[in-house]
Image (cartoon, rainbow, N blue to C red):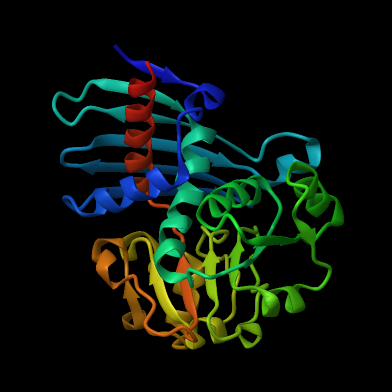
Amino acid sequence: MTEVIPFAEGQKNLDWLALTDALAAGHGGPRADVADVFLYEGDNTLLNRSAWIAGLGLAIKCATIFPGNKAEGKPAIAGAVNLFSGKDGALEAILDFALVTKWKTAGDSLLAARRLARPDSCKILIVGSGTVGHSLREAYGAAFPQAQFTVWNRSAAGAEALQAAFPDIAVAQDLEAAVKEADIVTSATMTTEPLIKGAWFQPGQHIDLIGAYRPDMREVDDVALQRARVFVDSKETTVGHIGELKIPIAAGTFDAGSIVADYYDLAAFARHRTDEITLFKNGGGAHLDLMTSRYILDAWGRSG
């Protein structure tokens, strides 16, 4: 029987910390076989991501990303996730795309932050107030419950919308000042030009980059990569595919060999000194969609 898991009911029994534990466990098993297909037409993207992990099964996630939809009041992203059995190939579940994406994206970053950010981090800046920004407030709030949150967004209306959902969030007017004051900076924007400058970074910070997903997209400049110890979720799905790394590597301003580790070397995800700057690039590969989908289906089954 194929389970159909909708958004609201599907997330009732989910837990952010439990998800990060599931992602960590998934990377302790066999390495994923992944394949990504990107098709572009102007600013629009068709993203098809597939993953196969022995013991966890197979997942296919198909997404359309049309940024211009926002101006017409339409969702910018649409798609679906199919989860298959690794034993007989049967379709086990069809999961709401937004459900998997929400929990995978923020959970991916939270796993890194739980290991790289200072445990006493108490000031968290969210850059970008879209759908992912809302998820980041939930996820980081679970791991850093005493933290004070601030949001910066290009438009005041966007920042105010996030503040309306989470009244304890402060709105920053100056991005540079907000970055300098934060212990953790988590960014999820659609910018193609570096928005956050490495010169603004302060000792002991953790920087979490989510927004860039295309070869022409970057959220930080070269200096940011040069000043930090850099980690990624998957070298295979980030280094040659995402502009955050691909552009400076091609320009010779950053060496791919400087990347400390990805999640398949999770033991290396550790802060060596309290004053060092750590930077994590969230690429959100299909293997993470598979691990997250399996976690959701397991939680769904336990809930009856």
